[in-house]
Amino acid sequence: MKKHRRLFALASALLLALAALPGTALAADAEGTEPAQGAPPPAVLYPAEVRTSEENGMIRLEKVYYLSTRDDPAAIPTGDFDREGRHYTLLDVLKNDLSETDAKDYIEVVTLDSSTKDMGEIIKMLEPEREIATEDGYTGILKPDYTKITVEAAGYKNNSWTVSATRTYPNLSDADASLLPKTITDSGRTLTLANVDWQEAGEFYNAVASYTGTASGRSVTGYTVSVEYSGEVTKTSRDTVIYTAVFSAENTSHGETHLDPEPTATPEGEDAQQTKPPEPTQDSGGSVAGKIVVTVLAGIAALAIIGYGGWRGYKYIRDKKRGYV
Image (spheres, rainbow, N blue to C red):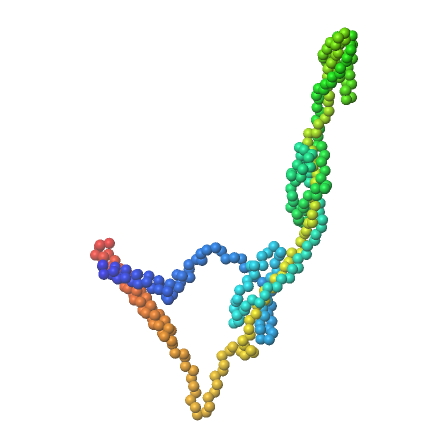
């Protein structure tokens, strides 16, 4: 029993070793199923047209691509390639810009609130440029016109405050307030006598009278600033750029066909020469011998596994008849 188990283990190890050999079909299949690692390949552009021509023994192949102005032409394949038995090399990439753009002047009025009407402070508040996109598809960059800034009061509020004024009345006969006017007019406002300061000057009196009153007015609560932003805006009406990748290859056929030539007849009385297959080289012989060895080893391993399976089946039937299982 131990002998059979050792034989099965040896056969399994032999099969694993054969699978690991680089020249075997098992190893090739295992390598072929390995998933590709790394980042996904970059997007490849495919031509809309392919044109070929021939001149002076040179084959010219043109691949035509229709891109937009937003597409990157660097994605166009420009490497060497083989096609129909010829090797093509890039000559040039031609560009034909068919895009059409409309342009026009555009003005946008921007308003904002300000707590001051000082022009220096207002300019600091303005954006140096604005990116604009109109409803009809025009885009561009606008800049402010500082000569057309207007500032207006945004609102007012009513205010009131106390005002005062003094008057001096000299050489009065007595310190009597009745000798003084009860009201005065100052800056268009009527003020009322509020206090008198008497000063004695010999036989007379000097009076310094204080008058007070209430003044009212409106003050600005804020300002509205309006500024014009102007500039040129554009719109692309046709967005097509044609790129043509031009490749060349040398025509080596020179009008001859690549078909195998017909066998030529030998003169009468002479033995016909037979074409002999090429003698195997040392490398090809080694490769054939290696394949034979691999095949033999694989057959031995398979027979060992089959024999082990048959022995296991026979042992099971025998033990069943004896009542062991």
